[in-house]
Image 1 (cartoon, one colour):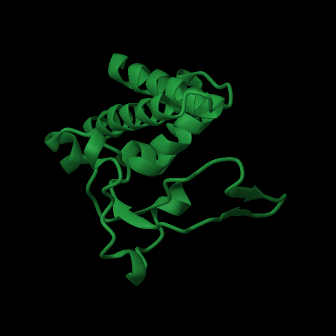
Image 2 (cartoon, rainbow, N blue to C red):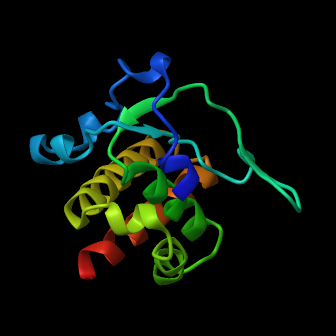
Length: 148
């Protein structure tokens, strides 16, 4: 996450402000999701390739500019969905530089908006178990952050 958060924003993404959570966020939360960090909002096990010497983050179909809280929080939800506790996910992320730079308000704002978005998508397609699992993981992550 540190290396990813410190990559320079490519020219192609400079005008692509992150807005996909706007309809699930309050006006105040929307402002906390703005920023100038390259975001990869589709971090999951198929988009991170690991070898003994190197790691690649792939599937950059929608690179955007946003808060540095977005990518690590999106990863945290994936970790929770994979069976980690929210505290365990935070413990892993907290060792990184990017986590220390993320403001608590921005982390909470993203977590709340992301939980709302995932719950909405799960409600639209109730037969898709993976959507329900993501909604539960996002809600668990959000609740964990709110308690800290």
